[in-house]
Image 1 (cartoon, rainbow, N blue to C red):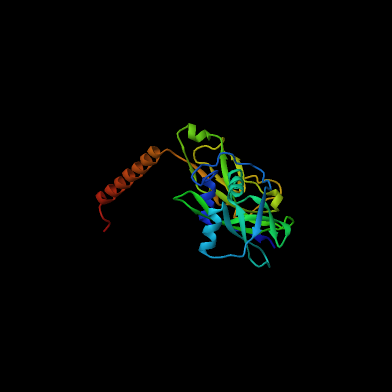
Image 2 (image 1 turned 30 degrees about the vertical axis):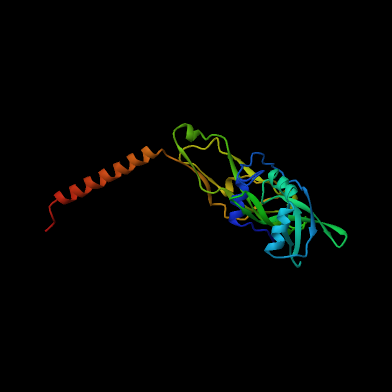
Length: 248
């Protein structure tokens, strides 16, 4: 059975829009997931006071957990954590978390499951790390990146992006930050569905194939003209019906 690695909506929105700092845009999306190393140490102190002290010392309070594991409270370097978020696609990055506990180090493969931040001061406040197994499939949402200028747009059509991500299942080493789809051949009236997307090797879509990803609609003016024409025909039909004598 696949491990479910869900990422909350606010984390997706935050990380997809954040880079070196939460307010900056991600400009360097790496296509294939790397596994950066992040060092953490076990912490015993809890509460708001202990968390504030860690942040003043340039660290972030964090927690590590996974299937069948007791949650473990950690502290990680703010600058090291920020560097990893800056250089990756955010919630889908696989991290090698080296945990120092009781004088021993243990490396764990983890994903960032939840990230709390202070939008006013543009600071990360707390991170949750979820352990994964490299030989078991995981379920994640991957962003869909539409590439190219559709023929229909050149002809005056309007591209409507209906679905910006897709739920997939794959082994961690097959995970990608985005799925690129060439839409340059789309014309007015065309639609792109999940089943039309060629997924990377080893990746399976978990959503129904008929679901729409993007459509290329007719220009708004053309739609209005069609609507007016329909209204005129309907009015003409009603007039003709009113003028016809009633059958006795």
